[in-house]
Length: 443
Image 1 (tube, one colour):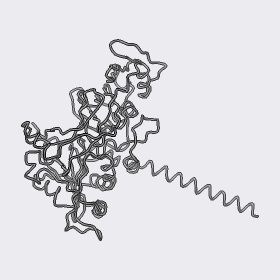
Image 2 (cartoon, rainbow, N blue to C red):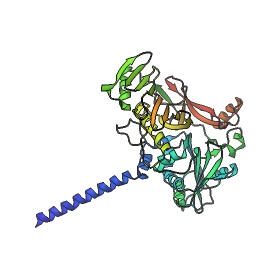
Image 3 (spheres, rainbow, N blue to C red):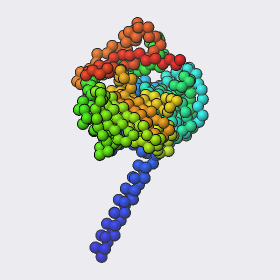
Image 4 (tube, rainbow, N blue to C red):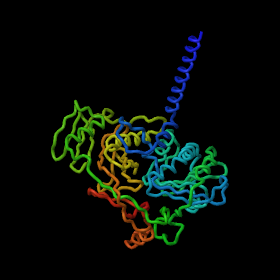
């Protein structure tokens, strides 16, 4: 009898384990759960697809600068106080803060109504007088792509944004954004998103004096939405190297990571190293720039646009290119992260550019961008990637305080431009950060 009872209990235990595993599998397959799991994962070195790589959607969605505004008069949890808290040039800090608000942002964008045009005054009020969080992605991201990264779903929003702010209002949450296409400010209102969750997420932060240029006459010469901290930043000095110096063996490893079969790929040298498999080829220069070209019939190349879930076709195109970039660059870029710079319509297709950043500081390559893709319909037909490996040293860059950096910028006649910390990489072996000017003008 005891033996029979033990068999029954063991059977129950096995069923419980099976049901638990099934539930976890279904949860992982849910469109909302999968992107947010990747979004909140602990950031580590980016690795190639298929080799210990999770989706890494956060590489595209993570802002590079953020600011929280908590007015003293709002209804805060007991013991919380008003604050202005900013995060600039700090990848881990942005990731930690974004993790707190990404769910609210996804819910607001997914459930908002038709965008309403607002003026500059209301935009500034959203930044400085309401409880909310400002996000700067540095690159220009189409909202269908951002929503796809956040929730895996489609959206009726079509604007391209670099900056947005998520705020509380009495009946829900708002997203304000600057449309990079027409230069106008807009508000999307959601009556579904939980504004109290946003209050809870943003309370408890300590004021660190962050401010926008339009709030101080001392910085009136800058682009008004420049986000600044009172003290001079202290970014690391990085060493830089070309990871492709091994010649043909480096090219073999690269094309294998991209999905070429070595058994059907031929290799030869001209002024560059070349790999060819049918109508697909990759050329590798001595400086580490790899160029892919497909010259066959439409729809038969090595890199079709892959359906990513319930997101838009545009999201599928951008995400396919990002995954290809990670396959080529992820294990070779060291401590750099890729971010989406721009998506541009061309007569012959869609151009998608990605850049490198180092701990939240953009890298200015003399080549222009870290990766460029050309997509024609449902096929990636060309791409170029600049392969660079970056490692932080124990040294810090010597950077002027923001006030002196602003004076230097204005002395060069660059009034009205943004003061931005960058690394300039022209192929040397050491990178130090310094202030640069970035124009916000739209001609």
